[in-house]
Length: 445
Image (cartoon, rainbow, N blue to C red; front, side, top):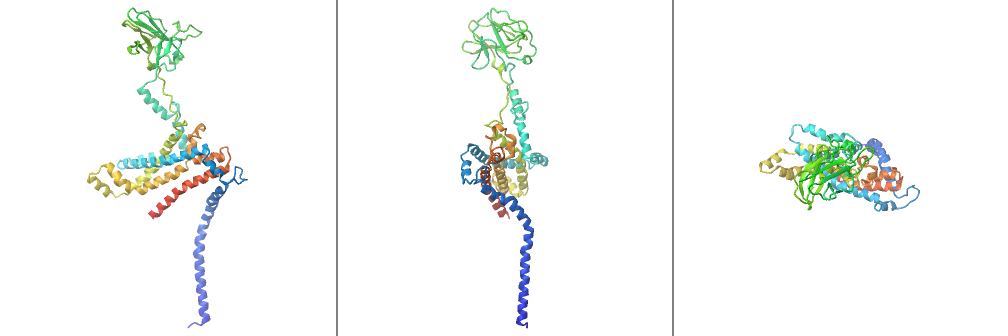
């Protein structure tokens, strides 16, 4: 048997060993965690705490103003617009990106070149959002000769309704008036034997129809109405309304003759010298007009970067960038679905849309939720693509919370108190999505 002193010494030694093991069990993990914890405290915790405190001070940071900055968040038109736009982004973009990703993943599942297709759709993710914004800024240019989107629309419109050759022309005298339905007509009604003189101006020589020669005044017709459509301009001067030497006739121009009720009786086109004739006209009073289609203006472009369309235009660009991400993630989830369930449903007579709605989507719910929540967080922080696409004149209309924070702090206002309040608001809006993601991760684990 051990003596009491020896037993006591052995107990003290055992306790010391346990203490050293306990100390090492705490110190060793802490030594690994400490660098990360230090960086986390310096780069995350301290800035968050400082931003929250700074939001209660004025522009200079010298005076405590309480919640005044937060009150301004919801009373300033500049910031209210940003909050409304962000709400619209949250409602539209995550759902659209997730839906497009699901549709493309399902449609491309059985094609042989699926890898190449997914690579092409995913490529916008390889560039920065700011670069993507610059690309779409060029796509959205209003002038069809510069903006790709308006160029496509212009090509389609030209195929359906070509621009008229006299789009910029106006009457050279008051004897020619505009019709309510379009086109130009003589102000005075004509009858058989009269000559219609339809002089036009503001027609550049480069836009005179091909094949035009010097205009001539036609001879009257005993049983009809003749006339001339010409460019009523002569270098060095001239008399408006008179066909003079050196003035060009306008060829291939559509001319109409209407009765007193405005109904079209007959149509014709002008010759190379601008003359035309309606040979057989019943007795009566008629209006001679240059047809409306001659004055159809060319497509001048849709103002995609204007105040009314700027936010939807940016959303389209953002969707273009992130659809590839959604496609790849959802396709990965689709690849591990139990195929026997899908085949069994098809054997039972379910259509593809029923299989998608009742089997594929429920089984993909965790993946779709992950994509949706990720996009929800991203659109709350959207900044660079808005800054790149929206011109300075419409940035107030396209404003979002992150951009408002940057413009308030660094865009010339230098109001760091209000900018800090905007940052706190953005943090509060993002936190629920982060907690939702954390809960989902825990459930999966």
